[in-house]
Length: 375
Image 1 (cartoon, rainbow, N blue to C red):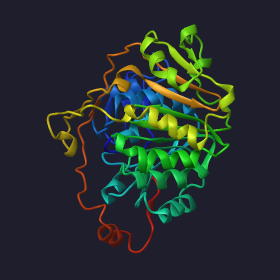
Image 2: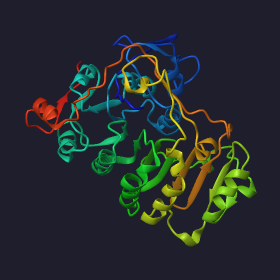
Image 3: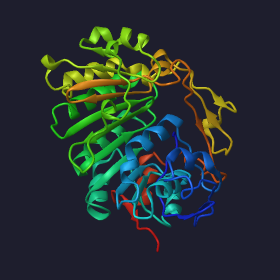
Image 4: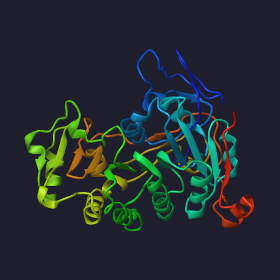
């Protein structure tokens, strides 16, 4: 969410999860099949805090499940209270190798099971140091860092070439249509010409880009068993999109295909689609309960969303090379998008860590400081 995390190895037991750092979860990974992100997140009762939007959790279950039980190399920008350390490792398993990056030196406390890098994500030298000294490649990275366009763009530019085939880059917490010019349009120019972009997925507040290759095909909801695509949901022009969404049955897919357009993933195509669906990133309001809690380190806090029309009627949008797919949710018109804090241990935000003199003094002239996980 607006704070961030990385990952740590955890032990799984029949009636819950026992974490080495004291986090308690009542999730069960053995009696009911694989542990899901949703089950883990909702079960955290105490210990390191975790704070994510519920639709982001759904997104990760959908896209990152392919890494479950594998020796995946993952990373997250932003650590804050460390709770997603536990979530990622609990769900993906002990083979996962996770790296955390943050600008707050206090986050080195989370290097008990993961590597921690302290540095500025907007600094290209930090990324060069990370990929030189920590890991040369990644399978996925989640950016839940500073949330400014330049930071998100620099992360994209640095990380995309270092992703393994089939890898994924997710950018969280894109709150506002003002991101269209400084972030979405530049990222369209970056990804649009690249032949190694397999798909671009849009969720409320999240963009996830998938790389070609790997042993699992890019996510395409039209190929899922039971995909509901009524004939009237198949369209061929940009102008038909709004009407098709309005008329689409709940739980169905709207599919736009037009062979004369060529490859959908191109600079102009992505810019047009990002502009069309910018409402997924512009809520009517974002109320906090209790009021103002989102800017504190308080354990009790829920950030809500007053939906835009797009948020109310679209769960996700998938831009594939030959089609656009719009996922109309089963709860069409009644989607609840919120971020509820779980856990009891919360790191207070660092007010001056983003100030260059403060960070430079800590790093002593280096681009980053890396802390390998403790054994």
